[in-house]
Length: 186
Image 1 (cartoon, helix red, strand yellow):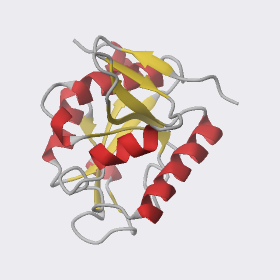
Image 2: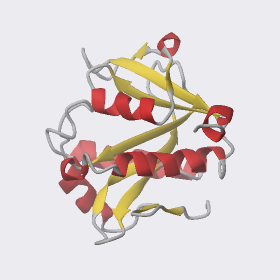
Image 3: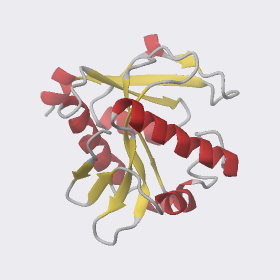
Image 4: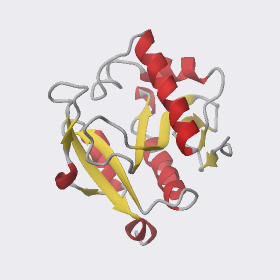
């Protein structure tokens, strides 16, 4: 079993999932606004499939998307963290991927950026990544905007079609950042 992950920032704790997290996570993040670019609100089967994927990912890799908890009140804001890219037909299969999903009332407070920075620090430090990718769709300007603010660069040469979705959600765009760029950012 991999060593438990607990990463603290000024305002947040990123940690492995535990009993009771799923209900709090889905209550805040399985909404039409949050899921707009992620395939839509999930049914119970979809929720369980996501939990199973996170658990299997952690077992395989020693890490996966972590719960993001606000220190001030212990609220679960969503998840952020790392996984190995594994979408069908992905041009970056096996690459270290950073991702996030926060509830709507957490948007615009810098939580996603704070959690993503901590995740990228872990990717390059604790987990030894040479490069990290991030995936979204062109319409999700908030997501790729954060990727740019993190210093990631657009990798149109790696874009691909995700067969699990129809247009426009199938057209995956890729951003990446390598260790040297991350360590030498201003």
